Image 1: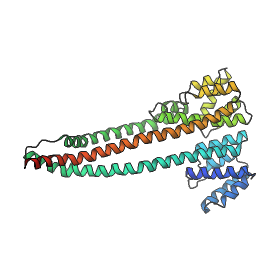
Image 2: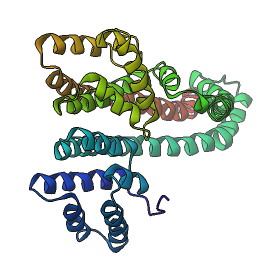
Image 3: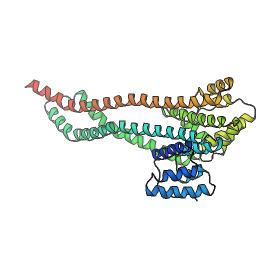
Length: 345
């Protein structure tokens, strides 16, 4: 039975596994490493780790214990594969460092978005106040003086008119998407779901790079541990905690047994980076496939970080420009007719 415990944040999970890897590197047995880390954690975490120790002593694998603690699926995947290929500490360290980087990128993105989101909310309240209260009074006054609406007044009125329509359309799309997700999408095989996800603009490339990175680094560790490609794919198939890679391993193993080359198999899948099959071919030709895979996994991580920085640098100025334009439009919609009145006097 799975334990009901307080959820561990991903950053806390990654830090725990990183410390575990450091202790294992220093020669600690697994149970002693868990016991040592329990002293550094709050009381409620110690209770959970004591239960973990009991499960480990009963012979349960470490990845199963972490699954019962509801650890992140990618992190438990690293542990699962580490238990198979023998490079336990390096694999834990690699997975934890990647998870820490991801959490830092996520926190950085949230911090970047906090200020513009706050500005958008404040601008929205200000816009509603101007459009509903001030602008109608000024418009009525200007009409009595035969002054036509200026371009900025028209922008404010048009934005006010079309915003509810746009919101209604977005809500309708969101509702249809949720219905599709629960009734159809999540019932599809994991491979089919990923084929659909990589077609999403912008997000699809992130999914490709993440799939490629995860598969490449795990295959690299497995090959470094002395396993053949077929044996490695069999382990992917047996990883039931990650349905996508489990299905992928099964399909790839079947294709490999029919005589297809590994690079040709990978080139058929749209949820991997296009360069991945070429890296496989190059690694097989020079006899250093595991090293090539590991280096390419690091390259995928760096590309993910570059893309996050690139899109954030484009999105932030665009948001600020839009907010500035709307604020200026609100003020000029009122001030320009007043200037005309002053010129008349």
